[in-house]
Image: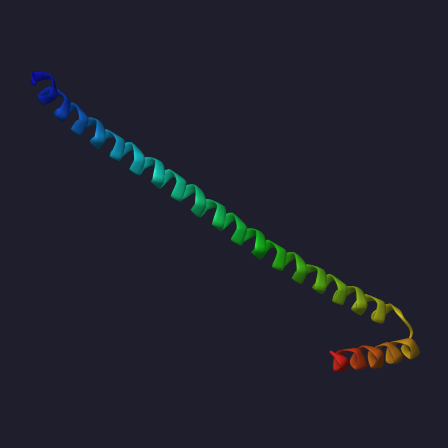
Length: 88
């Protein structure tokens, strides 16, 4: 009976330690998940920036081509681009 009296406080202390360690592990996992979510969000934002950059590069290329052509080609190209914009 005396050994049971000693085991109860030991079990209480062990349960307390297990709860403390478990809470720290859960916090670490939560931080890791939050970091992964942020990384995915920044990847999506980077993809949008890359797409916008490509779209702007395409527009600059069209403008460069328009500026280097002679006047007759320029007028025809402008009209073609206007009709393309109206279709969208």
